[in-house]
Image 1 (tube, rainbow, N blue to C red):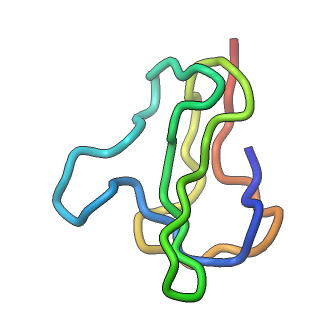
Image 2: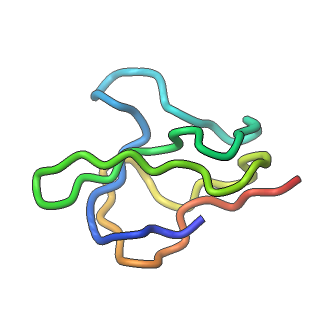
Length: 75
């Protein structure tokens, strides 16, 4: 999955909370998988397909670019 916007990547809804997803976890289309902060607005990124999270390519708090690859999903 790629980033739909420029912003800061967060793995949890609030600092110190459990991550929304982890490697090895299965997600369904529409599941919230991360938060992207852009222009002081918190945006939920939802899975655009069903699958297993094989890899998370960014770290919590990392800045990301538009269309940057964030997650690798597999069957």
